[in-house]
Length: 407
Image 1 (cartoon, rainbow, N blue to C red):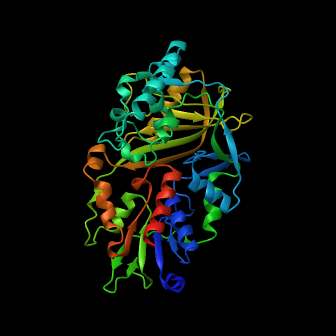
Image 2: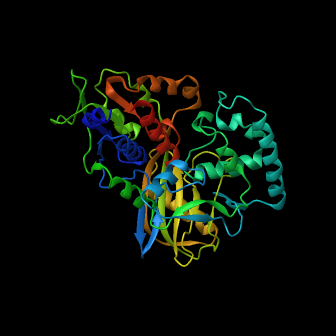
Image 3: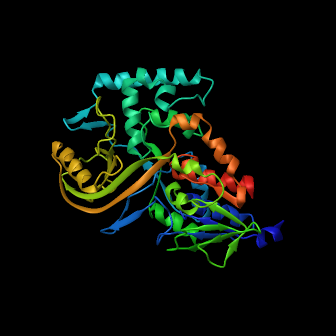
């Protein structure tokens, strides 16, 4: 078996969390995979930048205490993690174009009451994979204060909107319970003192990663092998771990039905690193939406000041497809001005096509089973955030499970 694995060549398209994790797990089994990454770095939607000798996370960053896959990978390469502390003041701020709103004492009491109703509801609901979106499944329409807060958390962290995501996007059911816990905890998870990008850089050092090499075409050969970009190198198997819109271009002319790649919805996520004055002294905020402003409107969803002695603040926003980053910047400036905050300069900005997902209706029709039936056909395998959930942990876990099941 070991000799067979050594002689079997495997290519991976995409050097993000899915591709790197798949490569590591394959290496542990005795394979020598080759990873093709179109960008000049690995990590995908992870992006750590340095300003004034401080590190700031422009992309995916969160590592929960239950994220065993990521924690295991960090331990593997001795990547240092620190316990993240909660907000110094547990305060939710809700913003819209009319101004800034805070939870009142009565609303906080309602929140706690609704949270216990929420727990009772889900513990007595046996079918955890019910055919519905998350709002309907958790009966959040009857829990307005709770819905308002966890919707802010969900969307602010880049996971879209609760009424657009299927329950099946939560492979681990009880994680949403933790997401809804009243924000009075002090130990929320882990952060990286060296930047999350360095974790994936260290893992990539163990692998054959070829940067700045975009795969534009694969060719299925009669001997069952796969040719990439028309070159002479052939592979016995291919793992596609890049975003679905890129994958669609690669497999467009193949015989198999890959029509599922046309069914994705996206969230467009924007992160800005700004220098402002003054800025509230709290560690961070989770802004949300007031009633009537629930849909995407380029509002700032989350802002975070990771270094209290540094004026740089990270701001995250979601928009509709086609929204200009300049318009989003203006929107954020208007909101912050209502709080008495002036943006001096924008130091860095990044836009992401984020959270590729199927609608609840498509999920209910069995799209995941359809994709699973394609695994291994033509020696092609599929993994990535769209088959699990848009977090580093779920993406890495799906890739790890794929290798365990098929290789």
